[in-house]
Length: 494
Image (cartoon, rainbow, N blue to C red; front, side, top):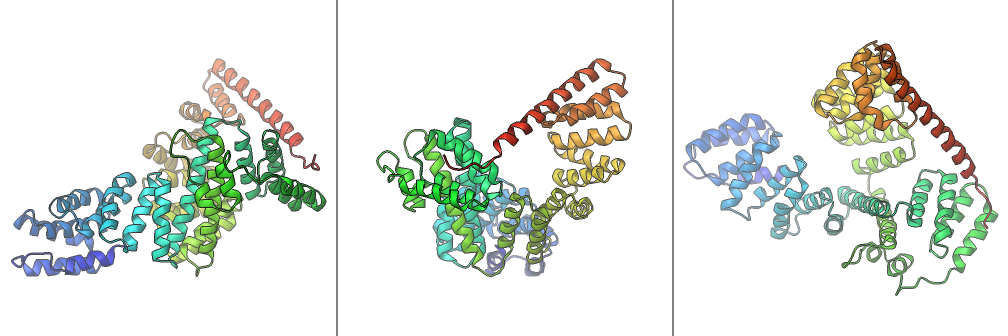
């Protein structure tokens, strides 16, 4: 995104006239040919001869940044900005480096200054939107993405960023609502919406009806139930439920402002929370609804543009949400064709193959990713757990140890390593890893394996305790299945 800006800055005569011309020219040529690491020592030599020269500091910072040495580039850009606080290449480069370092909050300041200096610069505004989104400042991020779509209406990155920001805003509103009142009927209504998106219509029917018990007059839920009836082959019930929606009185705009705005189609107003006092469950509900609608509108606009990496990303995410993991993998591959070597896309492709239980394909993609980043905990786990599921625990162990070395809190890696070591007969080594992973055990399987490890190690008391907990969890799972079976019935309207 910044390459053209970088090279125009380098070629723009930022070096003083008395700089060694040959070294300067050689460094420029190396930068232009993408050999950034080779340019770095030359710029360091030039700076040693002329300490504090802002042009040389900027060029060295650009070389470090383009070579992927983000930590080294940051102090160089900051040094330039001390003497030239409005220099656009330094502001944008500092923001880009902070984003690469996963420090979005620190990227906001310089990028705001860059946008103020050049409001029509789409790169600066796009990075500012990314930084605000990464810092969970969703309202401000959405505002910047909206302005970006006005600047470059056919740029898929702008529409994708806007759609993803609204999705994050909706998820944040739901999380806040759930933490505040997990039993709220508003939570049930939003869960039902999610179930519909995943084509889980029986579950959606249950949650919509749970919401209506406490919110019989809420707009939209009867219409949503009518759609569930249509999707499950009950058109006559759908007609009855749609009639209930039509019979609801208009929303009381004085008492329920957000609902009134949403029903009227004013999504931007409905997504705005009150400026004073804590947000009510009702306000959070309509914010989530409106944000989801705005996200959909943005992604529909994205779909109207020519094929792009971003469009394939959206399709992949939708397929993943619907547990269509091979379809998701197809979309990630298509995205990679448009952005070869993109590490994030490579990562997602490996994950989709893993979720689709195509473990050999997951291994192949994970190994490609590990060639680029050998310490990646996620890709080491993907490779290790794939080997375990392919019944080759000995090959799994090194990858799983590497995952835990990079992220000691990765409990899924502890679980897989514990299982791998157990299958290799190394029960004493397996037990501590299985113990750490017990928080993930929702069906008793890890407790069962831990009981076997204790038993093989001669610790009968601990083995009995773990086996008892295994039996308790198995009974809990059976009871939940019975309850779900009772609830999973689509009945006619009351």
